Amino acid sequence: MAASKAVMSRVRAARTSKRGDKSSPASGHNFMERLPSEILIKILSYLDASTLFTISYVNKLFNHLASDNALWNKIYVKKFCKSKKRKPRCVDDLLKKMAPVKEQQQAVGYWKWLFFKTVVACDMDMCKRHLDRISRHTGLPSRTERVLRNLRITWELTVTYKSGTYEQISTLQLHGVWRIALSCPGLKQPSRRSLMAMLDMQTLNEGAKVIGQDKLVELKLLHPGIVIGIWRGQCSVAFFIFTLHFHKLVERSIHGSSESSPYVEPIVNPPFDDIDPEYGLHGYQLHIVLHNTVCEFMSGSFSQLFCRRSQICDGHVPLTAISKTNLSQHTPLRGDMTLPWKCEALQGTVENCCIISLTLLDEFRNPFWCISSPVSVKFQKTSISYDYDGEHYLIHHQDSDGQVKMKLVWMKEQKQFVLVSLVVYVSIGKVNKYFIREY
Image (cartoon, one colour):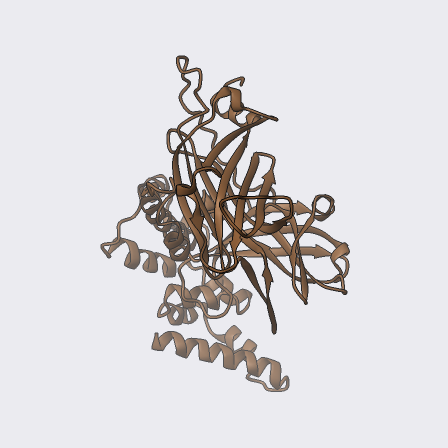
């Protein structure tokens, strides 16, 4: 690393000299041009992969020299051939295909490309091993969060607008950004962008609804999982909130194309049952969490949820997890239902607002319906209960696949909410398509 720092210091000094004294006969640019490429490559041979990649951004000359096959072949052999680190099978297959290519026929940058290709393959190999461990409670990979951190995945929101006002926004694009493990200074780090969502604001505004507000901002739900915070009285954007469900989040963040289309989950039809007439109406398992960006209010798992044919109503299959008449199922919630926000130097808290994360599994324990979206907690004037003396509230989420209705009672003396009813309504069209039925 001492050699790397010395070279980087000389490059910075040369660039400073070039910008500063134009009359100097020994400017950095002329100095580099006079040095033979063999000497420059010899100097670069002391650099590690991170520094060599970073230095390629200095100018065209260094970009060409820093892609030299001999330099990257040495780095590749040291990291993957002489070390005990196992290469994935896909990389071994790639090397066999490239074996007949003579060294002098390999294009400049071939070994650089192969090095990063192998690093990516090793990361993916690790990723697959960790994602194979499924939680028996949620039916999802239990180490998704660890994999996201190990792969250094971040998310970037691109807002296209004509001016700074809310009405002038035209499109929203959400990308997952996967950065390769190199300790490069600054932002010059090899990465891959995966388009996760591209949304038209005009379409989103047609169905937007207010879910909460405080003295500074008003929250509008544009789409399940997408909230925009608007400064009250100014009609300008304060912030955006995207909530992402863990289901296939790693795949969605790295496997989509960079510009055209997001990742599409492979369609796998469950086995068809010709005997059971209630196939598709029973054996569901529900895992649900109410939370905000700081804490968790409630978490619960419910198994063996079912619906009889006679209970199908208004195009939905109701699955009751908590019955209003069964007091033993009623669940106290922890803390106040609030959604904190922060924007630059300002911050606040919107009351009666939270995030619902729901995972519904089919009878084969495969994810059937997944939700992660901010919701409002609305006061219900007409609700009456002989079991509880308190104000009644409703959490209602709805999208094209179904609805979720949660009824709560605010216990003033205990200063807490009690969840007294939880029913999931799945679209009959979704059930018929998934199980190849005609209910």
